Length: 188
Ligand code: FES
Figure 1 (spheres, helix red, strand yellow):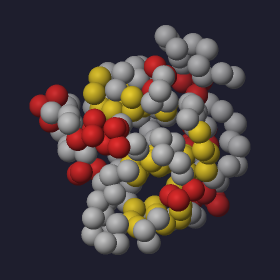
Figure 2 (cartoon, helix red, strand yellow):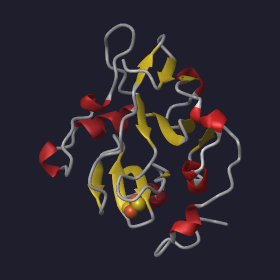
Figure 3 (spheres, helix red, strand yellow):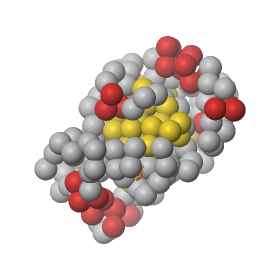
Figure 4 (cartoon, rainbow, N blue to C red):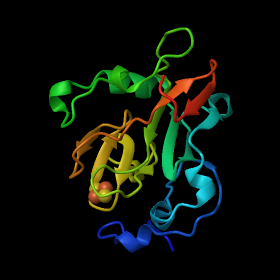
């Protein structure tokens, strides 16, 4: 099943995929999360209260999708240009106003790490998984994420910019255990 074949009127069924069992998926293309897996999470998934991820495994411009408590979590290594673009957004243009900095967590040295953005990878409209491709229209008009279910566009800070989603992509609880090791599921 290819979720990209029906971009105009995709159905919810298009986004039901068989679980691969892979905890982390790396890529710059789209990623469709198995919604059926979210509805019936396995016991071992539910037991993963926290997951650790070393961001030094990421390359600039890349995103990984980690699995935490049955949910996809986007971990994105943003370029300097992407960070500058996120910072330059006028809050008056936002449906759910938040600065980029308000969506970040400080590292062990107390300084924000704007290059790493961590969000729950679930559209805040009706729960599809937005597509990531900052270099192509698949990622939406704001070079962030695009949800093809009903056309929500998120910017590269995960803020809703266009479409029916009411709020920004949610930020999960997480903290930096070291300069590069993230623990998702624990408040900073
Ligand atoms: S579920 Fe994403 S736009 Fe409706």
